[in-house]
Length: 120
Length: 106
Image 1 (cartoon, rainbow over the protein chains, first blue to last red):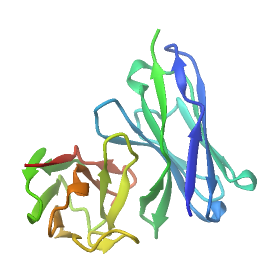
Image 2 (image 1 turned 90 degrees about the vertical axis):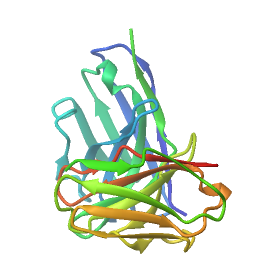
Image 3 (image 1 turned 90 degrees about the horizontal axis):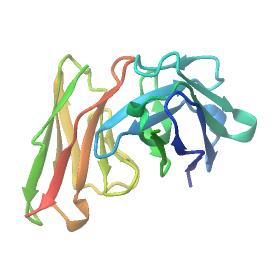
Image 4 (image 1 turned 120 degrees about the vertical axis):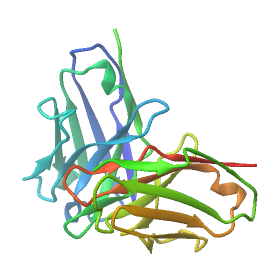
């Protein structure tokens, strides 16, 4: 059974940093692209970052580019999101998600999510 | 690519055939998926590549469409289908989600 378990969320002041983790199990982690997707309270979904199987390629939308860094440790089947210079608009539930497909990727499994609140 | 879902709120009765719409601002080339999100839960993949049913999803869910216009159909609405449904396009590198359709029981 595919399982994705996020951790590391919490309350953080604007301008500070936070690092999220995602522990994966039930599949060969190193074979899949992985991603983070967020959802602001009572809002829609927004893709935040994607990382290739080896970790050599990463992709971000403009809203977080230069502030967020996605990384992975295939030996530990773990995914990370380093968030710097946090803003109030980064307040959201952050989901770790597995990506599937050939060349173009959809999210096929999601974690339960972790809440990040950016507030003074 | 911007995705517009309609309606934003849909009320239907158990047993009804329900149709949800998703329209892209550009051609999506069938790289369109549908997700179901129940209150307090993570999204769940229902359909990918426009009309491929994800493993374990009931056959009452189906997807169709092409170009810029896509549809999710529930052939016979069940109480457990109450949720918000999001479409998602992955035709280009900047992937995007629709704003969602909230489905409730009448």
